[in-house]
Length: 172
Image 1 (tube, rainbow, N blue to C red):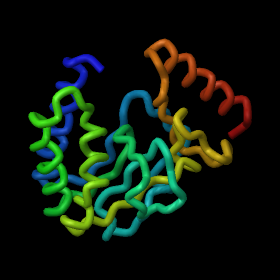
Image 2: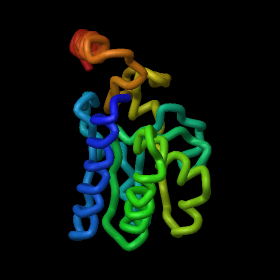
Image 3: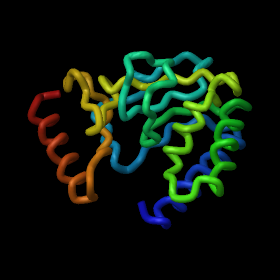
Image 4: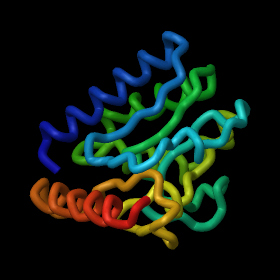
């Protein structure tokens, strides 16, 4: 990861913190996430869930902190707990030289921040929120595909083109 890329990711985290402080819930999606279906139908409508986040490796437990998050797709509700999470996350920026913001959030989660803040976090099943790190067990169920675990932009574009072609050819 280049230093400029890491700086950009931290600026994004700071911006999203400001969105939460203004009282807005939001879905965040990276530009390399392809939406094949409406993701809202696969997100939990439970208003007590503060954050629903995609994973690179889903353990089978939607509330298990052992899941490996991916910040390429998530839904977050604005409340004091999520604002505190994003503030804690952003505050670690200067002590995390060379680390992507995703890795820092994963460390926070594995360090117990969810329990400390009283957050309710749902880790999204790769059955629906798929990626190239852990593909869906049933391609007919895929809602989003994240071009993660690709070595280059060219690889991402090529792989996403192939997914779109296969999806169109399958008759959905």
